[in-house]
Length: 208
Image 1: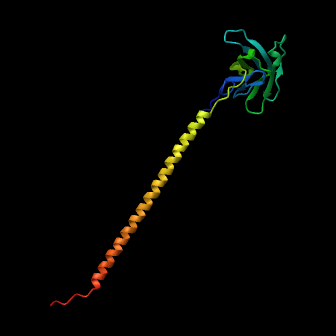
Image 2 (image 1 turned 90 degrees about the vertical axis):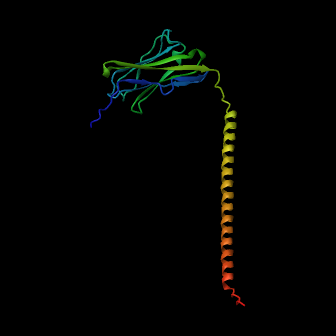
Image 3 (image 1 turned 180 degrees about the vertical axis):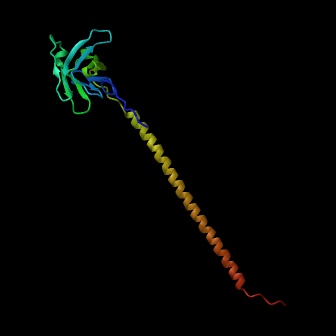
């Protein structure tokens, strides 16, 4: 039987988790990877920001890519906003996919929102695909208190250990009892044999 090879068109991915958090004042990389099984040429790409689904898109970065071996050519955006001046493209072609990750520096609370990576491949008749990351900005990351979890794990571990100890003691006692019982049986059998031997060796008294 011949198995047909499945070939997918242009796909854009932002990773397994498209909801990310960043701490105010830090830098964050927003992942964007695109792949296509027939290769690509004359790709155009752009990153857009929206505060919500209905707000007007704000272009953060855009450019072109000749092929996999070439470096992206950035197209300058006139009149950069405060957010646009803090983004940098971090491209990579080290794997079979192509990476168009965007680095956002000095994250601010106003940076929270939707970041969309859009890619168009001329080789696939200008097929276009996109993926979105949802960024939440926090003052500090919450420290998860694992005390209760550790207590529960310790208690469960202690109970399991106690049950194992009880089982071992039970097996040991049972073994000792069975061994002593076997010894007693051997002693009784040996005593019975000796008695029979003694009785057989005694001479019978002559009848009067």
